[in-house]
Image (cartoon, rainbow, N blue to C red; front, side):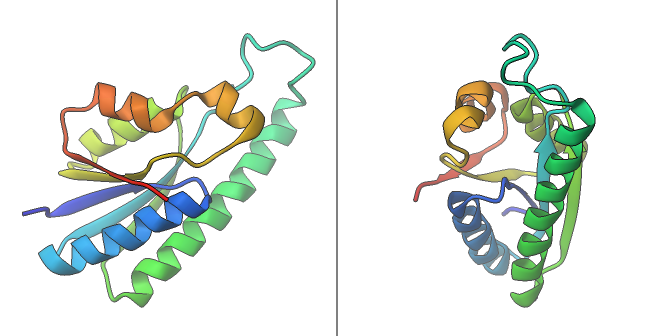
Length: 145
């Protein structure tokens, strides 16, 4: 039924639950799984200089966080014996990166956590899951914690 499952991750506990759900689905359907982490290279545009710090420092920290999250997801998926691809993607908005990746990678299901980040990042990013639901025509499985 599902040949290729996309799992957007952000390093949160809810994202790990989405990975676990994708593992179960991939085993049931013999699906390939791709885990992605989307970095917004300009998340503080329009917020003001009080919240922003250097672009290079931000990208360095975001890339390190992304690599850690992708490595953990890959390890879990491979331990389950699944075919997995991982990718760190830059997109102006996280939801857009997820939706565009789903289309370009020809996935047929998105498995995403209901929420992940908190604090300032949640305020700045808004509801990524809600935006994905609003902008894709693909089936989306929302995993709650």
